[in-house]
Image (cartoon, rainbow, N blue to C red; front, side, top):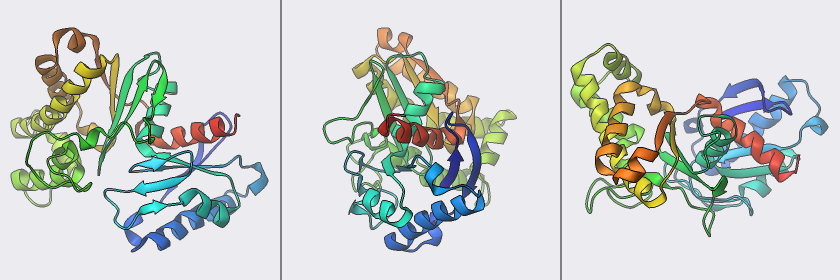
Length: 293
């Protein structure tokens, strides 16, 4: 998790990181989040009264209005957790929570690669595959505030089990764990995805083909969404987006060849502009908008 302090213009003034795997259960992780917020305030030598609030993005379905985490597909033990209320008690600050990909979408639509586009899909490629939809310049949440879960679109009738409990979801094919496993089979057990990306940028044919396959699977899912929604733009962020040209060219070519011609010609596909800070900036927007600031 990243913890950051933002000023009123949503510029990041300081940032830190802690690893969630070091907390072996839900209660310890929640305490860890609260402790990181409280220690951050002390280290930055700022008064608690000067803080508008805390915004938190979480990797799974969240009821943003009630402040409840329904579940987290890749972190076990989280079911119907009233995180907002718990953290407000522990930090004595207003707390607002949302899905992390929705926060990334808000940030990219307000200040990043989707700025100026009315209909957008923003997605994050990392441990999971999250997404957020903007329709007619408004974030689309769906009836239960759970819209945008592109990572759980099934690509096949049968396939690998996904963290959500279903089978053959997009995330089961292009999530970090699957990509790393495939990379180790091709390039050896010690290689990192960053190294595979570097090989591709240097023209290594095997690495280019590797990212091409990832892009093809992602492009198939995107083709269906493009046909359904006639989007202006798709913005791709998250760690895997660092694969660069080999990934993006494959995604674009797949969408052009598999989506219907009118919709395929309309949509633009860009890399996220705000990078790894998009979720943090989106969390800042969340706080300000909830407090009407």
